[in-house]
Image (cartoon, rainbow, N blue to C red; front, side):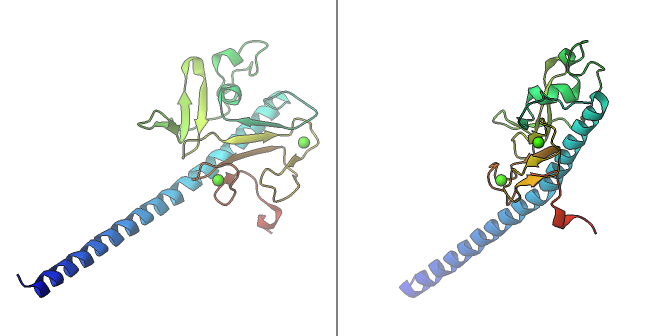
Length: 195
Ligand SMILES: [Ca+2]
Ligand SMILES: [Ca+2]
C-alpha cells in the first residue's frame, strides 16, 4: 500500500469514527431529553397529589400531619410523614396520627435500581409503612404552615412569602434541591395563574 493510500484510508476511518461518535452523542442526548420530559410531569403530578393528600388529611382531622409550632415545618417524604398519609398500622390507634385509618395518598410502587436505591413511587415497608421517592431517586420536600398564619416562605427565594399552607416539591433531574431551574413544585406563581 502506498503512503498516500494508507493516509486516505486512515482519514476515511477517522471520519467514520467521528460520525459514529456524533450519532451516539446525539442519541444519548435525545434519550436523556425524552427521559426528562416524561419524568418531570410525573414528578409534578405526584407533588400535587401529595399536597392534595395533606389537604384532605387537614380537612378530615382539622390539623396538619405535624405538630403546631411558632414556626412553619419542613418535612421530607420519609416515614414520619408518609406513614400518616398511608395509614400505617401504628397511626391507626385511638390516639394515633390517623385514628380513622384513612389512606390519603396513593401512588405506584417505587422501582428498585441495581444499586438498591428507589425511585418514582412508594417504597412499601412492613406494617403499612412506606416512603415516597421522586423519579430521580430523592424524597420530595414538603413545607407546612404549622404556625397557621396562612402563608409560608418561598423555598425558591423567588418571592419572600407564598399565600399557601402546604408546599411540595422535587429536586428535579439534577437531584439538588437548591437549583430551582429544574425543580418541580406543586404551587403556581401569581403570574402563571390563568386569567
Ligand atoms: Ca406560616
Ligand atoms: Ca434541582
